[in-house]
Length: 239
Image (cartoon, rainbow, N blue to C red; front, side, top):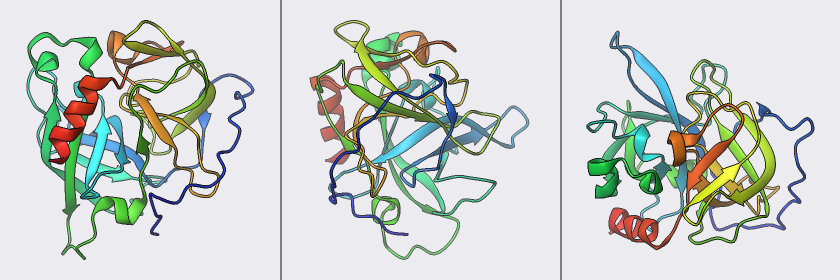
């Protein structure tokens, strides 16, 4: 399935979820589970990531703590659209990871964002980048807050995503807050979207689960604001 990242329909109204709790949702092609080796060496789903539009079409965004936790994680694998044990859009591995130096040195919660450039793994490539295969979210920097948003993430103990629609509020000048319970471990890095296109399911990405308390707790999720520093990190990753 190929979805154009530039095709934007009339955004669907994002009415709050009822009941207001993270619930199973339909997988979205650009959103997937991020795996790394567990303690036993077997692949372990530890986070969520999303394809975001870029000039080369090969860019993911996730939380920095998903890729650098005292050191860079190795043997990462991204599985977009994962469901029921099926990887419908293949497996993708990083060729480059960009994280703000302040996360590496200080674990600054305001810098809990990472970009990954990826290539297809496991079979001869047809030359198409991941964005041409899955479509992509449109990253939006310094987006206004207080409006409706949609949060999605893959729990570590299941291979289908959870989603919730609610308001993305300002926790502080540098953090977003999304007060919908039920996002457990594994959902870190999941996208916070506005202006979701009903035809493609893609939208404007204004944050990822992370930031304060590395994403929050069961009741509330957080995100570092995608500010000018994150925009610079994006430009560095796509240069």
